[in-house]
Structure formats: structure tokens, C-alpha cells
Image (cartoon, rainbow, N blue to C red; front, side, top):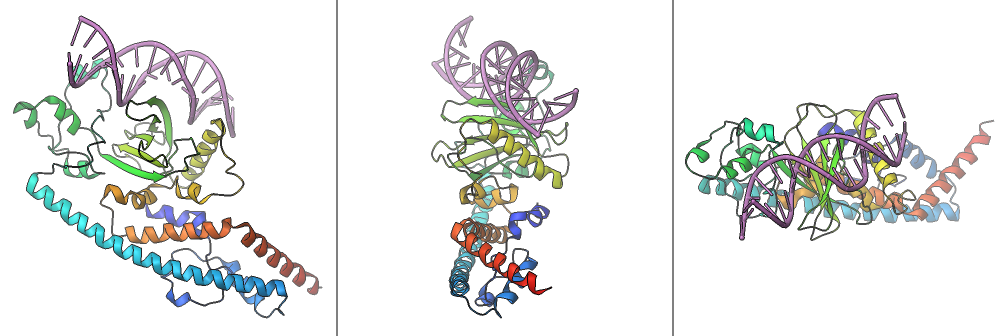
Length: 350
DNA sequence: CGTTTTTGACCCGCGC
DNA sequence: GCGCGGGTCAAAAACG
């Protein structure tokens, strides 16, 4: 998990490029890796005699710095609130599990139809897989956590329908909600793993097709993933993970692979809006790996580690960076200033 | 040429 | 028993 964040190039965007140091002390500890050139730009700008253009740029940068600082403050506040809410939720869930044995009243819309890995003839004859502990597997990961593979089949023997057993013996199920560009038809959710699509189906309750993926990083990996747009909100991709990876997360190549997959998918998809022109914030926000999913998964109440708020901050910082870098005028101004400065410096070396 | 995606067909469980 | 719906298979196509 964590290693991924550090390796994300987008996270390396320096929000403070060319910024005067104002507001620095307000900002939370640098959540993104600072880039060297920044210092260079900063130092070179200051002694410049102030062209009107440079002055304008500086004021613009100051304005953005201010805005950045405000956003950071808002971000900190949101993160604090999220922490509080999350701990409240955790307590509530724990209390509910302790008192009612883990029956979850809500979220009935999901998971229920998830079936054990393979139900072909041979296997159905084989044996009913060991049934984990009773209790709904609804909320993300929770089911697996609660339903340890201890294998108590008392439900079946005690007269409960074996169907329930089947439901409960399903592997670790987690659900992730990813914000996605509605114009992007691809059902690709980047989560750091390598997936191979093996099926697509239109389900009854949702006009949007559901895509079925299998982990292709390790042939023996039992993990499956279903991705479908939310019926309620077209911009939400719901990714349902079943099972646990029996291998580590693929290192750097995995990211490349995803990009390749993404590109291929996007390329193979008929009408893809001109995303290549500029990375939309949505496009940046969607297709984020697992960690980000967890942030975006707040609604689902996934029991994330204490680093969740930190991740939220990173995500928002990234989005802010995206916003800045997406701004053509900002980029143009920056490029102009930089190139001008470079040109100005280079001949004097001689 | 190997890998991945697409897509129609098939299998299986479930409700009636 | 039958029909429906979800999940999977596997051949063909697409892609790098």
C-alpha cells in the first residue's frame, strides 16, 4: 500500500513551485516530495529585475499560494472531521458486532449475489466449502475479517439453508467506490494490481454493464474483481473485490502495466473523449489505486488504518496540484517565465 | 507471436 | 420443470 503512494509521479508535483515562502508555516508537513527545480526557480526569480510580466506572475503565484494555504487549512479541518467520524463509525460497528453478532442492517444492495469462486458441476459435487463464521460479509473486508476460515458448518447442520453458508463462505469481499469520469466508458479501476478481464455482463438492476476481472499477476491468485457503475450515480465506479491476493503487490511494472491496460482499453473503446489534451481532475481522481479507494470509500465505512486522513490529505493535495497544472494560463506563464529565464542565463555563461 | 479484450454461449442456483 | 439472472468459459479479434 504505502510504497505505492511514494512512487506516484503525480504526487511529486510541487504545489509550491515558485512560491514565495508565504504561508509555508501554515501548511501541513510536506506530504508530497518537493522537487529540486523549485528552489532554482525561486532563487532565480527574486533577484530578477521586475519585468511587468514577471511581476504579474509573481502576484499570481502569491495569489495561488494564498489559495493553497486556505485549501490546506480546509483540508486539515476536513481530515480532522473525517478522523472523528471514522472513529465514531468504528465504535458503532464494533458495538453492533458485539451485541448482534455482526448482522449488518444496511447495505443490502451489495454482495448478496456474490457466489463462490466456481460452481461448475464437478465442484458442486465436490463438497460444500468450509463455511466461515456466520455474519454478513457486507462491509468492505469486514466480512472476511469477521468470518475467519475457522470453518464452522453449524449453520447447515443446524438447519439453516445451505445457501447462507454459500454466501458466507465466499472469500474476503471488499467494495470500493471510485469517482470516475462518466464520459469514460472503460471500467478500469487502477489499484496497483494487474487484472485480466474475463467477462462482461449487463445486470438486471443496473443498465451499466458489469465487468469481471481476475488477477493476472499470479496465475494462482484467487482474487476476482467486479466493476460496475453505480446505478444511482453514474460517476461512481463500484469495484467489488473477492478474495485475497496470495502474492505481493506488483512493483513498479504493475503501474506501467495498468497504464498500458488503461491505454489499451481506452483505445479499444470507441468514443473516448479527448482526455489526452489535459488530465482532467476527474480523470485524475478516478482510477486511483487501492489506497485512494479507501479514501473515497469513506461512505462504505471501510476500516482503514489510521493513515487514512493522511491519505486524504495527499489525495486532495494531488488534486490541487492537478488543478494548478491543468490551468493552461498558469502553465503557459510558468513555461514562459522559465524559458525566458533560461535563455537569459545561458548566453551570459559565455 | 504472445497477451489481453470482447462477446456469445453455456452453466448453475434460485424462485415460482 | 421452467424461466430468469448472475457468473464463467472460450473462441475470435485486437493489440503491442
